[in-house]
Length: 334
Image (cartoon, rainbow, N blue to C red; front, side, top):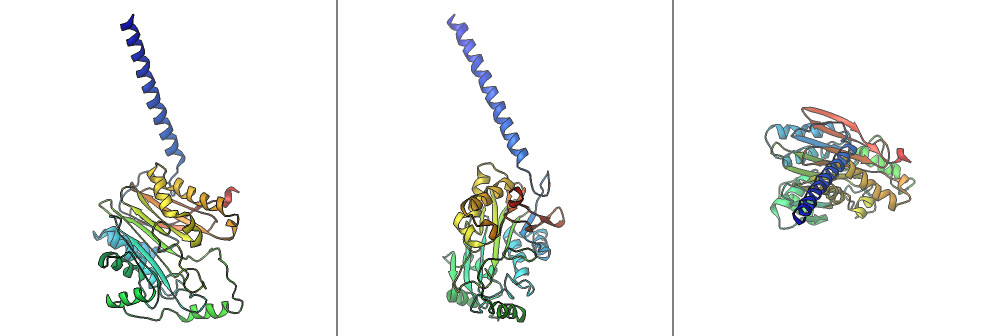
């Protein structure tokens, strides 16, 4: 009887283990099926470049670097430099809209596959803050440099000084001074921060983020873009995320770090971006008055994107196809 009871109990235990395993497998399968990938790309391939907003020239430059066998870090720097040099882009680099005192000040950061990070904030007179940020990461014992110190470092590294305030940006600033209304504007047609993520042929990730910040901001204001974990975060084991929009709200929720940690817990890039936006809208009753958008990639090359309002889009360069994709957004569910 004892032997029979032991066999019976063992059989029941084995059945319970099999049933539990089946339930877990079903739960995982259901989770994956609900976490749809933006752009409906069922079998991701590498390399990959994604960037906030409609910036085909930037993603093309990054893709070219990857095709030449360069690293993901080289790719995101090359891509961001394209936008920094574009004087028609009034939110990044030369031609960026100034602060309320008429000074163009730039912020940028970059992260590599090893988790190293470099950033500059409140940088004046230098066209390519993303390259200065990389040199902070690679050539100094620091991770973040600011203001005059950052400018002097850039000059010492061979970056020429240049007036960043173009005629069109100056004209826009002079027009703004007539009312001096200071509030975030929900971006519809134009972009603001450029965030870029890449995975190279080796499967290694890197990310970069560059901006001239909130137009007509108070002098000295710094947003989320150059701050690790907020505007950008990269974990080569898991994935990466970057943000665009009102930086104050991204900073308060450490949004990019949150997305990567949610992916670490098993969420898809899409589901993680959606949760990060929910964290913002549930904490701020005025969320209809500002925009925040996120993009993310995981180690497999799956992509996610989500924003508060409509009109946010992102670029994806993959399988030799450079396309702009409209993001899903929160407010259509309200």
